[in-house]
Image (tube, rainbow, N blue to C red; front, top):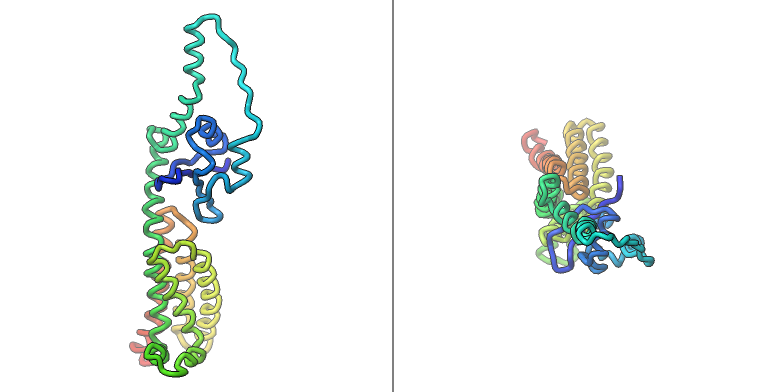
Length: 269
């Protein structure tokens, strides 16, 4: 399948596309785009200027211009008809209309783009809420250690080293705050955090279950759900996948909070 790109002008917020390399070249030849336009780089998960990608720039703006040979028709009417049919501006307008979903055949593109925009708007606040729940579930049991630190008691911060897991809770709280500020650049850090957390807590809770605590099995499962859901939320802009992942991640975070903090009250442990 040919590589496709979504593009937008520097002064625009709405993207157009997808376009393949040939379509981008046609737009460039017609002056509809220029090297300062942005394209969405899926690997970097960010908008990048076309001129910053040497390979893409070379494909769209080749150094050697294509030579177009035109045979002059004897009949003026025939020549006018051929010029109209082969007019590159007509092809460009068709490309733009199709990419923007303004034709019946490409209406689905406009609908898909609208859903991607909705998903992008929801990703950061939903992830922030899930991480905030995770932070509370970790920090709440260690409140007796955190309170002296907040009250600025001398040497109180040393208590954190008696429960190192509190550092992870504090990290979740910081990540949640940054997400509420719409800092999508921290997605790689979030993925690293959930991968480390899944391995550490999965092993810890599995050992807890092996030692006879039935909560260990449920907490291990909740930890995996939380990690898998959060990870997927940072990797997709498809609404149905995002929604499913958000539900799974939230369920895992709530499950961890319940089994860490509330289950002992009901079980008398």
